[in-house]
Image 1 (tube, one colour):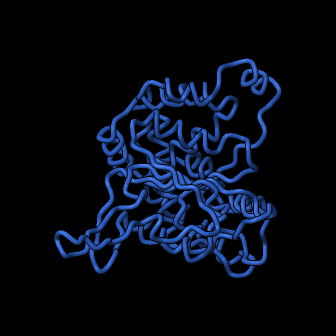
Image 2: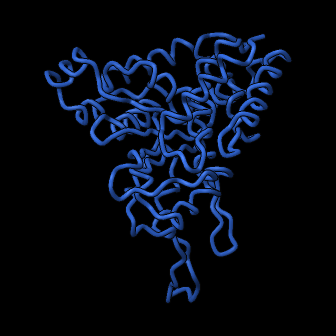
Length: 305
């Protein structure tokens, strides 16, 4: 599996040049059955990364452009009365796909954000009392603009906590940007990408992640991180139990990507800032980097087994 994953990473590196760590974290998040939040300024490749991931993994993707006038029904679908059958027929919305690209997710209102809560947690939607399951695997890859940009709404904590991981891309270095400028169009490259996995392959790899062994000392390490976050968090926003499970699954996925069948402390340290950073911000702090800095402090202060 390590070789297969490396092939995907090498393919993605030809599209998103010079961002190897961000690419590894993104693939790790999806292997751990998590939803991914990509936050950065416009134009650095957030949407391109999401499209490339879906293409390389052989998954069906639908894109939803989030705007201030988007309604929950525009995402979930709605029931429409059929005159011939004299009954309401449900027409699924774009969320009924394997990969959902929620582009500029923080430009939608809180009412629209609420439509994603059940979908991201339970992989289903309940409409007019009827529950509709989503296809497997099911991922939400959301892009988000920084809060200081015009027309954005801060995501509620309940929504942020449903994203397993948050990453940034940032500006490329000079050599990488030269490669992009002198090379072909990235969109054309995505269309020509070879598919490395199928949906069945992804489900099998996700199942393999859950079999990666986590020893008792590692569980104690994770619990210590959770406890310290709750004691030292600003505004009382420590890590939730869902965050603890996300930490464990992401560490298992990282170990699998490294070709190991057990988790070591370095796996936890590799994924912890991406998993914890967006969960550790207080309600009055809009700095995206403050949570990641707090996560780094926790890693330095909590003893490693």
